[in-house]
Length: 262
Figure 1 (cartoon, rainbow, N blue to C red):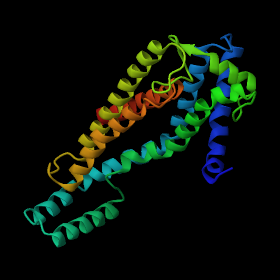
Figure 2 (cartoon, rainbow, N blue to C red; figure 1 turned 90 degrees about the vertical axis):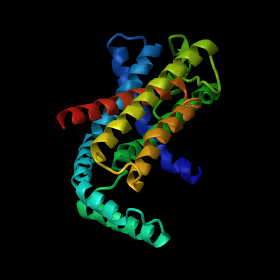
Figure 3 (spheres, helix red, strand yellow; figure 1 turned 135 degrees about the horizontal axis):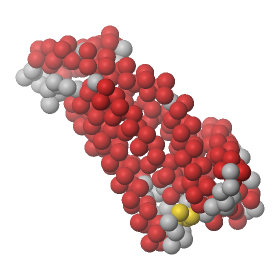
Figure 4 (cartoon, rainbow, N blue to C red; figure 1 turned 120 degrees about the horizontal axis):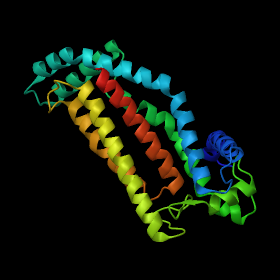
């Protein structure tokens, strides 16, 4: 077992345990154990558990965004002081003073990315679990907490005609159904990512000089992150797209509530 596999093993077990718990609960409530919607709702349940656990992180993120707004006058003064000075020494001095301001106020321009970073190992674990379904079924094996019978169930389950273990790039099942469902979810999750980052930027950077380094950093996050996830979506199994779409909807809802409350 290599280092990365060893590091990810606890996350794979945790992800699969939560999914199995929701699946068994839904099956006990009367849903078909091998049904695609039973497994889909199990993935949704996984999202709810992880995002609920991240609420304290989200609240810390909101506080960091508020501190970012409080330091805007100091940042504006700093930018005015260095305006028109394009030499390397001035740019370096401005960057150092800017970082000192962030430390003083206990925030940074990338605080919005913290929940995303914390979710990353769980997302990768789910990707590994779902991507390994087909090979585990062939090898008469399980994955994490999923026994072989559950692996076979998941491998044969689908929603709207698209298998949960299929992906846009690698195919599987009805190619048209997979393509349509994958593209729709990629568009939804990308739009949610863009709107979320736009809300964060509008709150944190109100009144900023549009040519400031901070604004340029936020523009990178605003446009690059959605593109990265959109492009990556062609590799994700349908089940992973379900996770990321629901998670992005949750994030957008959280940010919208914060935006409405000012």
